Length: 289
Image (cartoon, rainbow, N blue to C red; front, side, top):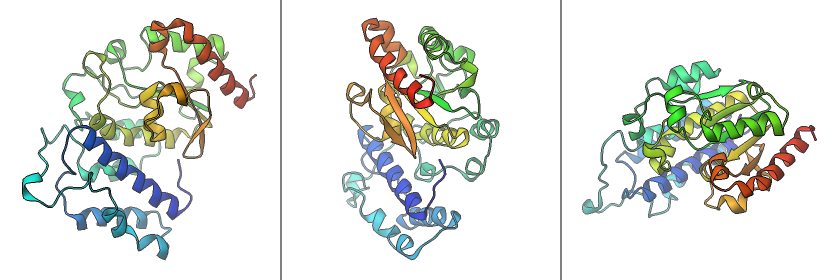
């Protein structure tokens, strides 16, 4: 969503850097990819200047922010602890902490999809059939965010078209009395993880900027996060979905309701009543109940 002050922009940058460092650590990478601290600071400084809202108290702490990164996430100074990356394409580079200029400037979803191109930013590209971008009303009041595409989605190029997708469609059309075309549906990662495994931290980190831009373009009033990875990614938390669901949260000023993923409901149909409680809360917020 739009950043309304340079302080908010600065905090968003700090959160992105911290999230990225944590993702690398969880992937087993020792420290950040090699890059000059000065070049990274210049990227942060340029990002703030681009906003056109520089303030003295915001500009000064940029170097302090880099120094304040937890020591476990920074590249150690000892030569024997230099990070070793599996391959250049498997981990997002430090420059990708911020969207490339062509992505930053896009104003529509088709432009964003074109900017993503034949994405090779993470290892998921190796096994996918096609990128699964998103579908629905580009100005929807309500956005559903899932985890990642499965086999059917990978083949068709559209999110939530398999068995879990059919259940989501029933929730939208029969439960909420809304046409599927009236909402927007997308995923955290845009390529299918092999054998439908969970997306890994480096894959989420590489793809998350595009999800952020999608939400910025659509500008929904409400977001429903479907399952653990959607909720935890958007809310920057490790709290289990069982504790997140049923309560309103906020993403960039947008009210967000975490709920259980439709794929989980296929395995645990008794918990459909919990999702219906969450959806009823969404309907009340929309003034439809």
